Image (cartoon, rainbow, N blue to C red):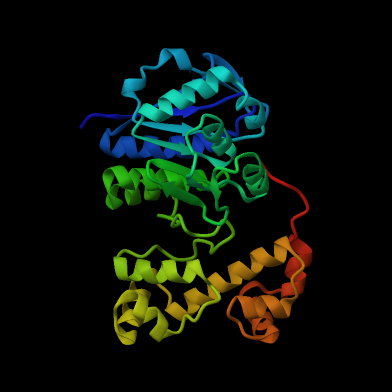
Length: 323
């Protein structure tokens, strides 16, 4: 098998986890299959300061790589991205490499570099939710959706912040080598395979395995797409094309929990996000996310989290922005 060459782009102020998380995913997959060759590239070879202050030696400058040999370009994010996207050497190379490569990916705010390079016009993209309005304002030609943890639009892949880059990398491995290799990679790294791309950046923790078959994947996707919709057994069965009894059995066997428990978990996570982000009344959130009444939502929070929705808001309301 010919190795796929993955070029990771870094710059002054890059976020280390945006590099090392996805890099390690490809390295673990390589150990299993000998499928990948990973390279780290910057404008010039040499030390590159990260956002944490630690420096990393970039073995390659953009002039050192043969574009014809690059399969995938992965652009990291970080607090330095606003300066890096005005570096004509780096953005010109990303534009050229991104045009010739089979696929292109960005982690978190790395999407700004892809946009500056002109690779994303008309594309649907995501990034960290704290960067959403800036991305919309500065690149109105993009279709920005900051709910999913990662998105694919053709050969362009974009992801939300930090750990979402590992989810994206696992998806790229699965796209290349199949689900079994991606699953084995996740197991080696003690990761879960895998949070689906449409999952909200604030969505369900990985308290269950992922579905193995298309009918159950369709059900899970429908639940995540609209947590507040009607998700009774009959409704979910129609998404799967199965009888309600068959769905109940298949769903529980594949995910380890019944559909009703899964639905409640998704709804709670959606409510948690809304509580952390805004001042919507608890009663309104209960109706929006399928709980019906505020009391039902309160009982679900106490049962699952040990706190009331109001207490959760007080503890976890976001007061700062993240890169």
